[in-house]
Length: 106
Ligand SMILES: [Zn+2]
Image 1 (cartoon, helix red, strand yellow):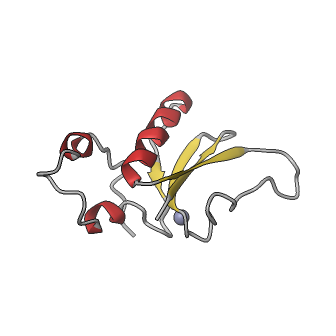
Image 2: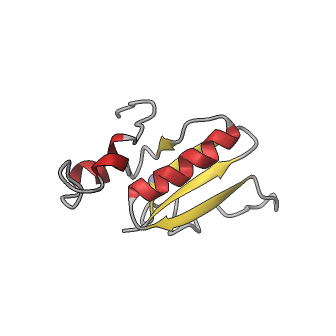
């Protein structure tokens, strides 16, 4: 399951999505629309949420914002439900650095 994020520039915002999200559509979701200009950009797909988040945070820093999670597809739940990632794994280090911006719940 790939992950993507969308960097929106006019009102800086970085939002993480699952590839199958209807807003994302494997990175094709929010193409330049009727207005014909690009206001943002999809990046992905990343093979794990951690990779996507790492990249999103990097882009977010440039925009001065923290990445957020799509409220539709809730990509952050992939961390909780993914059995491959555990504290005993070598990925524990990078996992501990994951920020969970907003802490919003529906
Ligand atoms: Zn989404």
